[in-house]
Image (cartoon, rainbow, N blue to C red):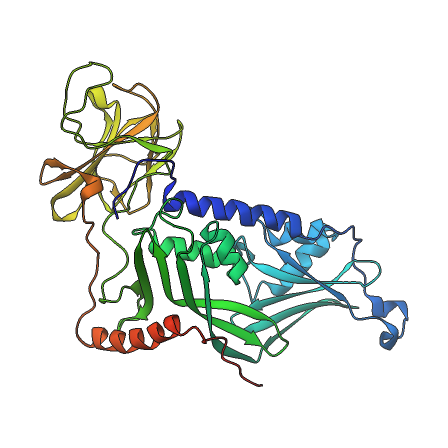
Length: 419
């Protein structure tokens, strides 16, 4: 589908919106309890059989937060928190914890002070408890079954609202946006009533807890077209998403290099220049966006120019494979490290929107060239990056047929299993 004029943000803008909504929800839902330093209840002489079981409180690691910050936020002294962290270090590196990781804090049912912590890692349970000798750790596998779940629905307001109402998590919606970002604008392409369907793994533990696993297949209707993606692992162990034809859903170039308000000027051979007031061909796309908006490379390549170039102002030019090149102009500043000879990958930030050079306001002047000739980026049929062949293609076809049947079977649901 071709990009159109109008208010739109692109897939990266969609991801940032979903993250912001999910992050704000996490802030609102994360418990805030006043607690006191932990001491061992059993050292008090109380009969353990008369003590109520600890209260389990789910806590999600916030962006930029550490395990130390969580423990001290719930009342542990830093020395005690440090001792607990050292106890779990042989099993999990605290530095590798990321935003979204979840813990169960075990709190005293009345005094709300920390008695322990539970963390699920690699299908096993890491449990830290307070004893008379200090923190003790238990590490044991958890019985679980792997199920296949199908979720489907229709767009009523937008994919985020309709998806969460159907049972998808914000993380799964983010994953959808990443898979289909080359084909779908998640702000402007949907119409009311468009369908979506997903097949994903679900892990169900013997204690009743569940967690979503790998997204196996997805179908989305948008702008009058149907898009499908199927997860497949090739013979070399590389997993990726492919369309029905066995071609990767990833493409050589993104649909847009930034999250933008509107396209202020399209590729036009008879455009009147806004400054010189003469008819001059405009062999580029101008994206109106606030000053300072990050701009990313639409494809992987090598920087061949980074600096000031006349009316372009601050410019970055990248050479890609197969004779393609892209230019990003009028930057307020070029991103750190972006210089001639630098190898960049798709989605790397190369600069920030500005109005240097011949510009009447903040926007990105974006050009695409093919073997030195400027072409209309919005009319480009962006090539896909990979095609399955041979035995991989044969195995993919079999897997595709099985998962397509699940996507289309409206009776499909979670596969039940007993422990």
